[in-house]
Amino acid sequence: MTTKSRVLLHPPPPAAPIEALFTLAIRGAQERREITTTGALPRTLLQLIDGERHLELEQGVPTGRDLTAEIATHRRYRHLLHELLDPATTGVALVAPPGSDLTHVLALERTWPDGERWQAWFDADSGLPLRIRRLRRDRDGDHVDEDLLRDPVRSGGRLLPRHVTTWRDGTRVMETILLERDEVTPLADALFLLPDAD
Image (cartoon, rainbow, N blue to C red; front, side, top):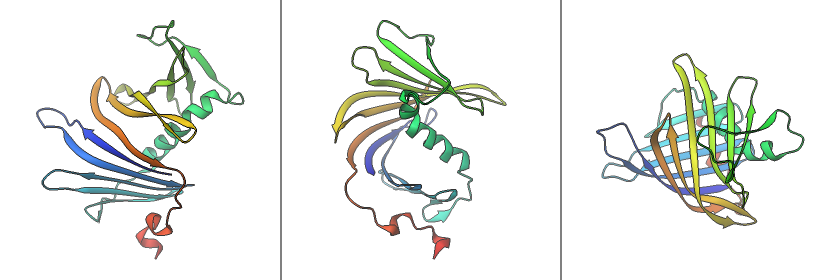
């Protein structure tokens, strides 16, 4: 699968929003995540993932950052809806989160062994996902990361959100607009090649 999205990053004030193009390619356990800012001085951040091996490059230079936790979060996010709706999945509860209107929203929640709680909110009439929330506790307190999903568009046999707004602890951090998605075209091996695999 490959997707291309337009991204608007919201750094802390007084910095202005940053526009970027985000390209994601996934083949099995291999991923290529590339974000390039589109301003006067474009910069590119590239993440290459092959199973448990990974490398992050900024402007072609390794950052040395450990992506293990980030990769696990992305994978949990991608499989969340399937797991919550799979009858074989245990520990899923119908909940009433603060601020939800139970006449219009159904919210499913699951807690993982590491203590993270994830919720998916669905429109009670259409069944479409409206919100995905990750609730976690770190050493510095409780945190809520959430995506608000809007403007569903059809891609193959599925309806996908075209517009996603990401919030962290009540602060907007990013907006993503899906431009294209391809689940048909084969992906070249070179896309996922880690430099030390030569």
